[in-house]
Length: 308
Image 1 (cartoon, rainbow, N blue to C red):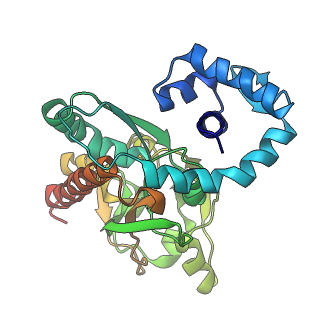
Image 2: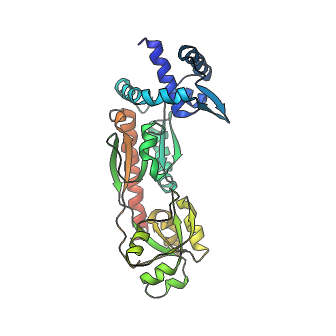
Image 3: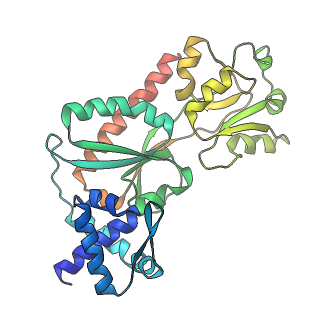
């Protein structure tokens, strides 16, 4: 294969991954006109329109989709082989994309930004919404460089590194009808529950346990961001089983209370995920190290904050 043909494939892969000429240009450190010119050459060489406008983005043709399915894995492997091995934070100019829930973003972004300003001023961090069900997909497609989320089963092409076991608490407002006396499993099941669902599901491990006891609960409200929990809990009769992070400050201030829940919640686990093709990417190794340190420290501070 001639070098110019390989270059076209790399540009094609970037456009397919990003769904946008401008974002592909940013990804490749090219100008937008240069990428557009490459698309023109692709259309001539491969005798297909390849991309059509779709709103603000572009949509691939059937031929483009079929081509990408055949070449994206080899291109990813090749990128891993030829990627620069050296990384100097002080001089590196690079953008990393991380997928994480809002609670993790809240934990890490300020410390990470301070670190970047001190050590790596030309590094950009772009956050991408996290959905628990697509961890391997977004890493396979190189939509993101890192995922921080719930530990789950992933294919052999995805690496996982444990971060922490989140502490869960049963929270409600002071003066809630259930705050007086022992919270039995029957009272718990009859309450109006708030659930944070990142996948859209309304059933979790709590519901599985209740079902095993012949009980069910009413999910009165779901939200897709942890940051929305405190205000709803403080100002309503909703209760929630929540990770400590988003409610720690409110418990400390007395705006929410934590009560013992009447059953054991299986320990969860949060992990850092990346694709095997980036195992030797020194930039990502640098980022992983600091993200891990920041997140673990923040989680520990939440526990200390509430004396949990």
